[in-house]
Length: 231
Length: 237
Image (cartoon, rainbow over all chains, first blue to last red; front, side, top):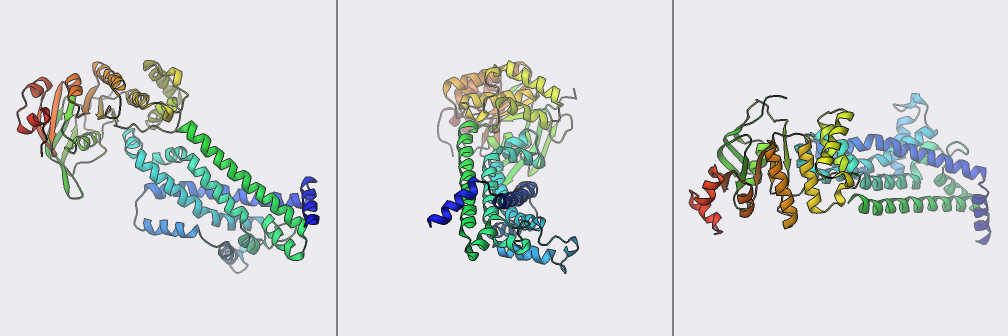
């Protein structure tokens, strides 16, 4: 195994253009998906936490269950949506990075919604009377609680990022793993390994692991720092 | 300034939670510019009464009437036994209720500065509020309540979790507020505290208002058996 590892490290150190292109696309897709999921999921989760309506329990259970949605199923659903004969077929998005962003958003959104709901609900138990006393109604309390729960929420968002950057099924189905266009780190690893092209696969694996480690270190440090700073 | 929201009148108010009457048929008028202390054993309904007056709870029956006709008076504030401070700086905690009230940025800044100066908090204005000691946190909670210029301030056992020194600091703040014309309605089960702060006493027993009289009269010569027992430290059931 000495050979492929050395070549892999060499690829990374030389910042090989194919490698960099794949990493760049992966980050672009996953970061976009995280951003969209947060934009929708944070207010949606806070809303679920602070409002009462018939069927609320069912919605909560649904989002909790969707956290465990297998990526291939999410991919399949988005595929059906975007395929020529699907409801959004006219947009011609299948096998583009946009389709991959959509699929990963579907994967991350339940995590963001469920975590936000749980964090905001807990905070409301503690803050509710005081915020109402200060004149804030439930709608006004939403941004307040999202901000005061920022540390816990950040951990959840990073978990969402981890899930999206690690999955292969969804992006493979809706992206098609087209070289230079929709090939991400995970789909490239799958392909290169079956082809026996281990150096690129290993290089991508190392980068992916490094990314995950860095993110988790970051999340943990922020949590520690916040515990001291914010109380 | 709008018309005074006081006196606040409770007219035959009851509050029922999951089948249990926590307050029953309670009528009470809270006069302006007085310090009213709500006394009673644990579970007598002191907290519920304060929350109901403040508007955090609505009566199950009966009416809560503010003198200016507002459903929930604007110019009121409440301090809880455990203050809930936001995970933000001291200054940001003072800014928050002003922002909720819709004050302009400039007006808020001026008011925050004024409040920080008034309570000697300038030095710690950038500190995270949650890092302060319990006594400091309660001081900040009182400062925050003061900053919204309330006509009436509700306090629910504000010193129950504090040491004697912090308790004295809080009591002095409450007396100052009262001197500035803020009506005080506060619950305590600490007799010494009631003697130091009360002008009037409302005595609750099992959700009923048994006595509401000037403090001197109540503390010297309670009219009801329950109040006598409470004041002499007997267990009453």
